Image (cartoon, rainbow, N blue to C red; front, side, top):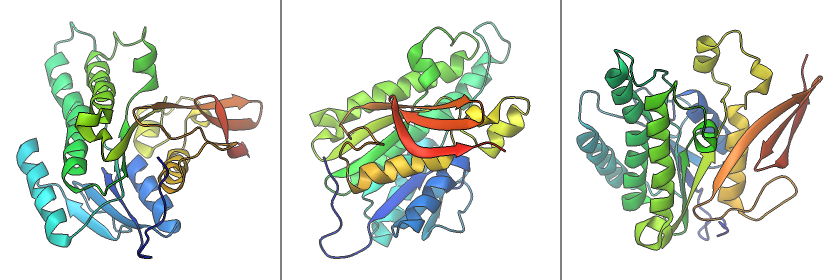
Length: 261
């Protein structure tokens, strides 16, 4: 589906769940710079978003999601795009003493946030809108999940949720639902957790944001972007050769080619 500009001339709106985090704030900034209205839903405020809604701390997911839904209704916010940018990573194998604590955190940060975004989309997303959930390329490719069992299980749930919501009986009858599949996102949190990694091989939040913006604005296949398709998964990869770095989406080289210092 292609996404046209608002026929009434009003600014379209992108809601980012987890909009104050490393990925979410990059998406908010990119859409704002493109002239969209933006709304952030997070535990802390995003000062640059047009609307910043706080997730009630201490509430169960169902209660908190209902409160956010009520706020959106009261504020008459009808998003054209909803992106779940919330998430987190945690390692640990099945025999670790703290595996259950890790599983709880991983399910909360990754899977339940995706369900919350889907719930908001079901109740508030504009007709022919776009819902974007974040999976994990490493989990989808298989063979490397035993050391991050809780994270892998949560992301596998997200992948299944994308397919479920893309069905006609899910959201597919009124919206396009896709999954973006990062390898490693270049955020301050990831840099702090992995200070010795080659950060040049990580994908910057702006790359995801510009791809989502293209799909939300047009959706057609171009030289730099694969076509937007309901239920599709888009793998993002950043490759380095010498001093050249290029970002790819499902093997398609994007326009974001740059040089390292």
